[in-house]
Image (cartoon, rainbow, N blue to C red; front, side, top):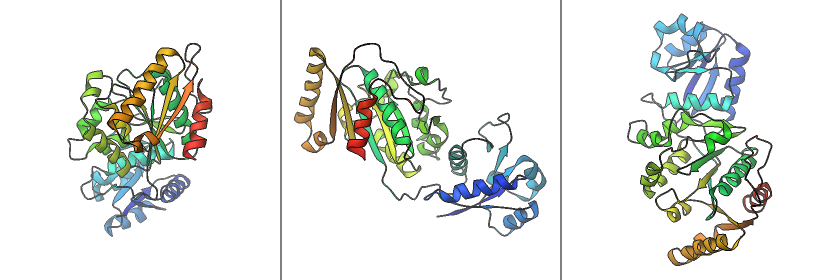
Length: 328
């Protein structure tokens, strides 16, 4: 179902460009139109052709008596006053603006924000039976490489995640909050849309700070979590940095279309890798094993994370091999 999104902004150039961008994003449930005047916007409201109104504050003040305020999203020229209550900052990445519109529109009773996908979302799990920093570094690199080509989401399933520290990203929510949102009427996906932060072209979900919270999430809840992301987003790839923090590692691996396993060289590390593969063979069918692509990496010194969009970490060559050889 498509909903009419009416843009009423004093800056006609901005309104036109934003409407063109929104209409270019295939699968989104909006048909955007911009108005040349407040009078034109009022006519669309009265004729029932404005399901959602996107307006700057000046124009909203002039027509607020004639419009249902719950259907209005006000665009602000500065970040001051942006509180998540139908107020968004106007001059930011258009993808971010669209995600915030989706989040706010999802609270309107008769608005359906489900994405009509033209492609199936692919899930990539990155895991190591050795030092978890290896998997984090490779997962970040894979995400950065993919995000240069397609819409990509990064998820850290590490109960002791270092993502905020190495990226400098501050999250307003905890991943535990996302699961609490799943119990509300809006559902988990409404919170997902508004909680992501950007690293270059890649979106990153909030981490889960409490190790015990991570371990308490069931396999079925993880399935619903991934399914909800696919239903209400346009991500083509989801990259999961996976550790033993989750309750059932192997069941989470089964959710992935592709699995990258990084095993560090060394006698003891080799033992752990062989034990991991033995568990796969004993407990699961060959189909899961066939999805695994293993890279044996050499860890010589302290692992230095590269978080800038154009840079790769110390295992960047393995990430490139995985993306070019497996995914493309």
